[in-house]
Amino acid sequence: MNVFLWIVQSLLTAAFLAVGAMKIFTDKKKLASTFGWVEQFSDPAVKAIGALDALVGLGLILPGATDIAPVLVPWAALGGIALAGGGSVVHLRRSETPLAAVNLIYIALLALVAWGRFGPYAF
Image (cartoon, rainbow, N blue to C red):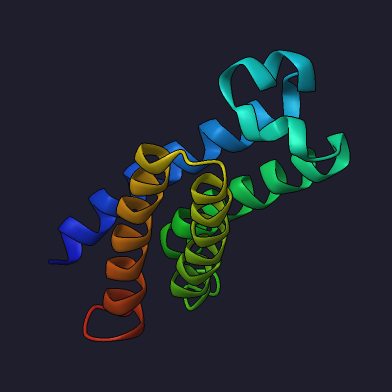
């Protein structure tokens, strides 16, 4: 199960870092063609959400891999749940049900990581 959690953490890290980098480094107008919700938020808010995505991604891997404060891994997973939950709300308000469902998958995987790393498979 420990190996499975590492795999899930790695995949989530890749997803959160990719999306976070896109939100941070891509122009808002260009980003709006991919993410329609961006138009409803200010540019600094989109950049902040991207930074939080990147922090979640790093927090899922680095503390456990470096053995420096590994207790931060499940806390990063909880932060990711909060971000994905907020994203689900935004998508549901915009009637983007399939995108909200994707966020629910992220929430389920992040909950698995939080459960495993807080509980029986803690570092």
